[in-house]
Image (cartoon, rainbow, N blue to C red; front, side, top):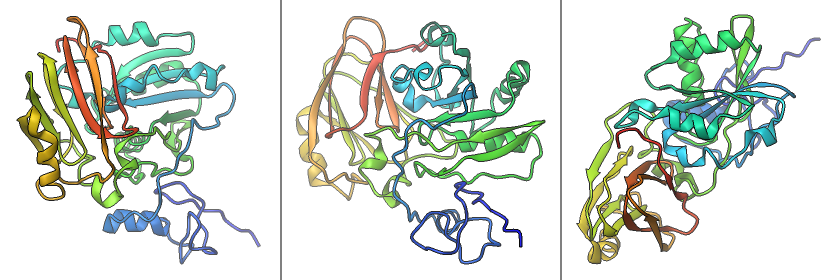
Length: 343
C-alpha cells in the first residue's frame, strides 16, 4: 500500500494525525491546512511560538533571492551571505518600497551590497506587485533553475510568492499573516520548468514579537497596504509609540518619523513622556510592553542623514541630532547612515 505524504499549504509542515502537540497536526489527512494554520487563517488565533530559525541549509550553489523589508534595512549589512552560501548567486530584493515616502537611492545600496555573489539589487512591492514584471524578467535572464527565497521573518516572502502565483494565474495561495515565522518548511511554487521555493523566515532578536503575544502585536503589524504615519519632529519633544517605545529629541533638529502600525502615536513634552505612558498604560497606550524600559542615546552627527529602525514597525530619518529611545532591553533599535534619495 502506497502512503502519500502531504504538506500543509500554509506553513509547509508535513501533515500528520498522530500527535496533536507536534507541528503539522490534522484530524483528517484529507485537509490541506494543519490545525494551527487553520485557526490562524479562519480565527486569527496563533497556537505556535515564534520559531528561532537561522539561515536555511540550501544545496551548494543554489540560486537565492534574499528579500529585505524596508523595515529591516539596517540588517542588510549585518549578514554576509557569501559566508553562508559561498558558491551561490544572489538577487537582493528591497521589499515594500511602496511604503517609502521617497524613492530609495539604489545606486548607494549597490555600492555597498554589490559583491561577486550579488547579481542584482532591485526594488519590489509584495503588497501591490510593483516591479514584479522586471523581477521575473531578471529571473528568466539568469535562468539558474530552482530559486530559493530567504529573508527575515515578516520580510514578505510568502506575500511575494502569492503575487507571483496570481500573475501566473496559478491556483496556489500561501498563507500570510503578521505572525513571524509562519513558514516552517520549504513551500514550492511552480515557475516554468522549475520552482520558486519559500524557506522558513530567519529569526532576528528584538523585534516586536519577542515582547508581545500574537493577539497583541497582530493588531499593529500591517499585512495590507495603508498610508504610513509620518511626523515632523523637533527638539525637546517626545513621541509615545503605543505602549512599546518613547522617542525623544534631546538635541538637534531631526527630519521625520515614519511608522507603519495601527497603534496610537502621541506627541508630548520631553520631561513628562514616561510618566504619561505609565499613567495611561494599556488604555490610551496599547498594546503595552510590561518589561521595564531602558534609555538609549543615539547620535546622528553632522548633516549626513541617518536611518533609525524601530523594532520591525517603523523608522526615523535624522541628521545632526541626539535622540533618546526608551524601550525594553534588547529591543532591535539600530542606527546607520542612510541611503535614501531626497530624504
